[in-house]
Length: 363
Ligand code: PHE
Image 1 (cartoon, rainbow, N blue to C red):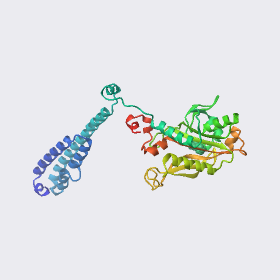
Image 2: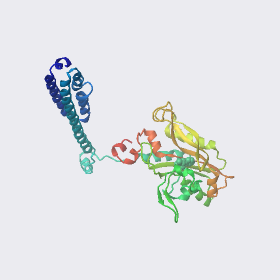
Image 3: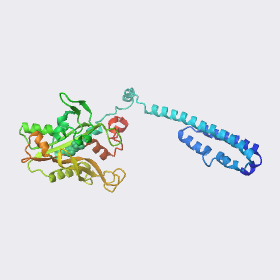
Image 4: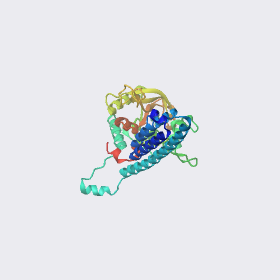
């Protein structure tokens, strides 16, 4: 084209109008945003006829080049404006279509019962996971206990060896229900306060030893993302008896892990810190996706973090009046939602809170 138009600027300008008209048709024919993307590349991309024409301007004489260049720039901007308008309109149409497709018709249930048998509901994934976890621990000789979700500062923090202004409070970004008088009350940030309640009750009833698991809902002021929820579920374990050692803790954790996740998944304990246990450990399990080989979910380590554990700190025994010279114990706590996520490969934890039946029906 450069050769044919070089000597005849008018012809070049004529060509430009024809090219622009063809480009406009291609853009207008796009009926989805994906098609529009392709139309834009075909008409305004580096290999488009118009881009070629722009490159050919160089071979025109200066006067003709100026004129053709101006014309080409005008056409180019109006085509860009056309693309922008189409994009906005197509995006709007696609959003409307998505909303219509997603619409939940609450009267549909009535019609469905007429046309087809009623679809039976079932329990939520978190509830069935909690039950399955309880079953494993009950089979190991644990009792199941519960405690309140609104806790005083004493149970949630102080009795657990986390006095006011202790740096560990930073680990627990709390929702406060009441501050100060008569008491500070928080939505419990973990199930560990129930340890204190169980130990107090056992001291009062003179009924130590304790072998208990405590499932329940916890709250932290975390923003929800794919792996964190502001409302989540934990299961706490507490054993207080004579002669309990770290080996009992490690054995219990490993027994639970293979029983719940299957024989290919194992437990690993890594040194860590919690104010209410000493020594403390982080509890990891073999990555359930790659079984230890290393993958994206476990950042190539082969392990996934599930919770924390350790030997009950003497300061905690002191808070509830248990003699650490006679008794020793261990505790652990880990995420129920995490267990559900790992066993069923749930990509985004927020799905557990959103109550979207299309997600929940899969389990
Ligand atoms: N309560 C700790 C947490 O939620 C977990 C834990 C429980 C650690 C019991 C040790 C012992 O972070």
